[in-house]
Length: 111
Length: 111
Image 1 (cartoon, rainbow over the protein chains, first blue to last red):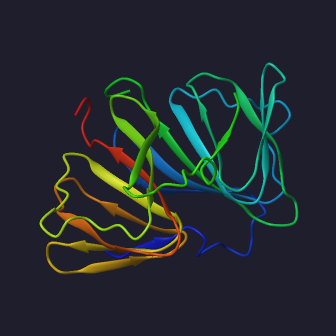
Image 2: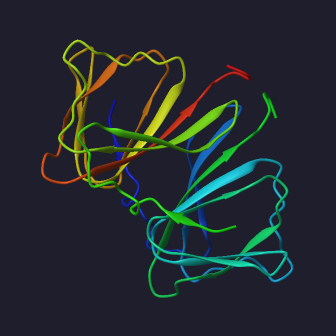
């Protein structure tokens, strides 16, 4: 039962955002995301079938909703994004890694 | 869609460990736990029906398994504890809060 550390094993090359699954079952996926100045493509809204609970553990980010509403996230900020709530990452801090922990979870069994 | 911060709203009085649900569905519970020198009772093993993925976000802790094996957790350390793996918290840092994020999740639908 060894522990790992979410701030370790961060690759040097973060040209693309890095998504890694830390644990999962059929109902949940726990994921580490590393961004560095990345943002979602202009045209690209995330429209997910599962709810997403997300926390920023290092760095800073802005999440934007289709309504135009924005949420600025700093270290420790968390937000719950219900399924099918269109959102995008409009900004992440350019000069350092932003480390996210995301928990994707379904509302009903087996979804 | 306001964000909250996991390091804020920490009560002054932490005589007992504090457990707060941050988000949940029928398959998952996301919980903040705040300890300050607390440990599980000597006789008390956690024996949970769900898997538990847990990360220490502030402070330090030691988790002990029934086998005697121990895991020292520092900031950023995470560990996955399968359902029915008996474990206890044998130590948390006495002079400052230890902030945990725990994700309890079932393996099969609806459990």
